[in-house]
Image (cartoon, rainbow, N blue to C red; front, side, top):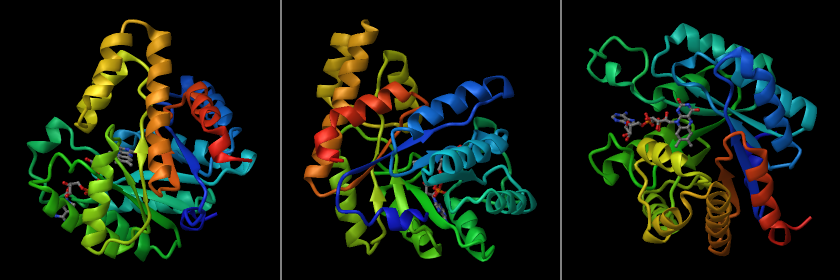
Length: 292
Ligand code: FAD
């Protein structure tokens, strides 16, 4: 099923993100975790693509398994920054063969080594190059892209970031998923600005339940997200108590989702990070709102 059709629903729906194993030794445990999440019957599940593409085979295996065994629509991520056109052509053919209908087209992060390199000979510079190739392939994927309510760290300013986002949408992105954020007002502000700029595709907010103190540091380093005082207080109070921190982090994410829905947003993507217990708890916290 194409995501663009799923996103038309008027009631709150949750989707969950999982990531593939880095090595074959952990394939079975990751597969089991993703299956437990699939049993929660999310509206869809996204499967990330390992930086550099080293685990691309697992992205497809996990996505295909969830779709075929549990009937949950899947979104397979694909990055392009370190790839050749030929490699991406192969990946597109593999996705098609695996029955993938939805693809998240991403550039991928630049490593510190890449940043110093001469990039003139690279086959891909931005995600928009991949979006164009996916469209030109004729594979009829529903294509998604990433967006940044707090501005992508490489952008000079929000105006420039939104200009390139417009280009990505014009090239064929049918929906956008946001980077994590911890203050919903940042999202509402961003939505106002992109709608004003003429971007009308569905935007799925990405919510990351922070469930332990180490995760906070990693997540914030990666995303550069602003942390409101209310969230900092939770970490100060519960950071040393793993069980309490987990409960507080899940409650904070639940609260963000309720506020999003109350403000008219019906599709929320949860960065559930291969943690079925976290996904389950968020779903049960919202059981009456989600309904049957
Ligand atoms: P782009 O859209 O190319 O944007 C990157 C920067 O380039 C921005 O500053 C943008 O304004 C600028 N830009 C865009 N087009 C142009 C242009 N034509 N000319 C000049 N500047 C331009 N990483 C992974 O490795 N695997 C994943 O599975 C993965 N999933 C993700 C899912 C989501 C929802 C998000 C938000 C991020 C994800 N990432 C993933 C991380 C992502 O790869 C990085 O954030 C990366 O730095 C940017 O990717 P992008 O697709 O947004 O790039």
